[in-house]
Image (tube, rainbow, N blue to C red; front, side, top):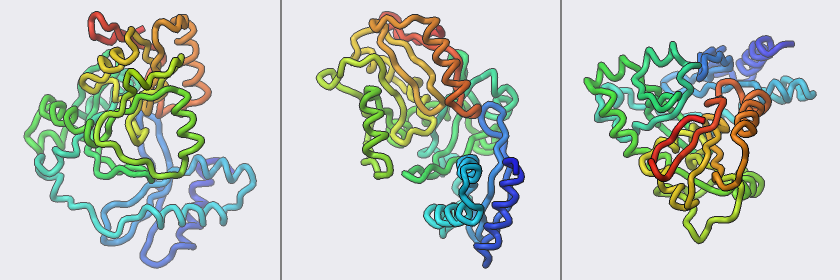
Length: 307
């Protein structure tokens, strides 16, 4: 059974198990970097927010021996934990005032998203692009978001500059930046996994007394979702340079996080680019790849350049 056949089998099993007024259907979407993903859409009448569940991880479990019945039960339990009982107020998105407080942005690769970028307001950022979305909800179980396209912007009678001014103001409150040592990030992954993380009210960066001598640091937002955008937050690169007291390299681990390496660590630039390409090829899903080379921030100019 290949993945597509597996998805259809899961759809059939879920419809059999759930019954009632809940319906399960196949859902296909074009995601970041022009990659297609196929999953199941679970809908309940009268509620206009419906989760789409992609099944790649479940497929791996199936190939490892877990039964289709067990997988369907796991998906059903997950749906019960995330489903919404009330509809999103659609009227809010008809006027810009209804969404401006939730306007945020993310970074994507320009070359890999040429067709998509023709349909959405965007701002060039080196060889990347800033695109906007409305953060409807964010929590430990994931986030709900609406990408802003050209039709939205026309309906709202607004422009890219207005979106940018509001988005860069909102991200500090909605998606605050976090800058930690790689060791701290790994410890968090090991010891805090599964626990609800206390929400911060602003950017959470290391202060000078807290800096550990480390070769690598991690920059992301507090929910680790499209956190690479933090490098485009106002003042964040300068604040990092102030903490590290030197220039630094930026390695695009994925669209969700960046690795920061102080220049004094003496890591070769060719080695960094080779490491980025290897990670992209072996560890990162195609839709989560941001770039295949490093960037450099210089304190003297206050600017980021491509490596």
